[in-house]
Image (cartoon, rainbow, N blue to C red):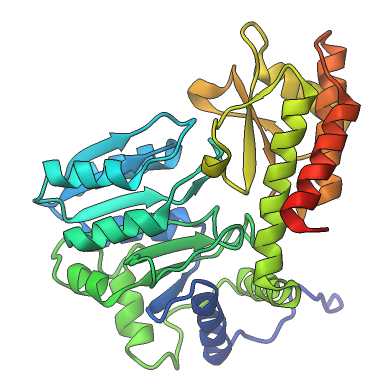
Amino acid sequence: MPGGHPLLDLPPLTARRFAEIEDRVAALLRTGNDVVVTQGEALLPLEACIRGAVRPGSTALNVVTGPYGETFGGWLRSCGAEVVDLAVPFRTAVSAEQVAEALRERPETDFVSLVHAEAATGNTNPVAEIGAVVRGHGALLMLDAVASVAAEPLLTDAWGVDLCVIGGQKAMGGPAGVSAAAVSPRAWERIAANPQAPRRSYLSLLDWKERWTDAGRTALPHAPAQLEMLALEASLDRIDTEGLDAVTGRHRAAAAAVRAGVRALGTLSCYVVRDEDAAPVATTLRTPDGVDAREVAAAALRCDPAVPVQGAGGALAREVLRVNHYGRAASRGTVLASLRALAAALDGLGLKADAGAAEAAAQAAWQAASGT
């Protein structure tokens, strides 16, 4: 028999340890609600929340500030809901006033779906203000916080979020194969009363509640994704060691530094116009007319294959690229390396680029944002 392997020959993950990890996720989300750690990528609990809480006859307000909002609209319609899409330009954020107006126009609305931060478009939405509006209206609020958790404040209970979904793979610096949903008592009531909610299904939150949470969390309902759970636990350990405020501060500094550096660099511009609308996990950049963003991204990666620069997808592919700065990439060194690679790429394409000015501006912005 071959020798032991540290990733293969592990003792079983106990129910007690699984529950402890759930409790630590709840603390990270600042919630006293039930937390279900789901054994798959975050699209699993996002779809589970929608299919559990939405039924024919529901009216759902779907806020679209990027591609995930578009995905949610498809799921909502497939549940038989009447869907009102509140779409705003991807270069901006939605406002609480826009949400309030949409709810006034459709007072029967009972479900609102919102993405906190859109890594794909580089914007972030004011959840605290929107949550107050939605709670005052009486609707349930589902929040996709996959990109925002550990990158910016996330106060699930204080903001009135009924269904809060996270993943570990972005700012948490953890695994992609495990995720979580915090579910409020109001949301559980809605799901339990929905005859269309998945049951005896991998998409069933009710199965987890009945077989795990309500049963005292003493016996796991099925074999857990052990490696991913241990990786999630390790990412929580790292956040605790650094301190959540320090982690979010590092992401805030990275975003400020990239935006300042790009403005000083020349040729490129920030796709999200206002600093207050910019997500701390990724900065999207716009190329001028006639310059293909995919070529700039490819050239930057040829200059430095390690930098987190990539082209945008879909309709934005030709005009937008993005610099990711989440998890371990939310560092001064990674930001500066990314700006240097972009400068070299632009120079190689015969375009204006002032690498020195970009680095100086980024350094100053990082210091101003972080104090270091």
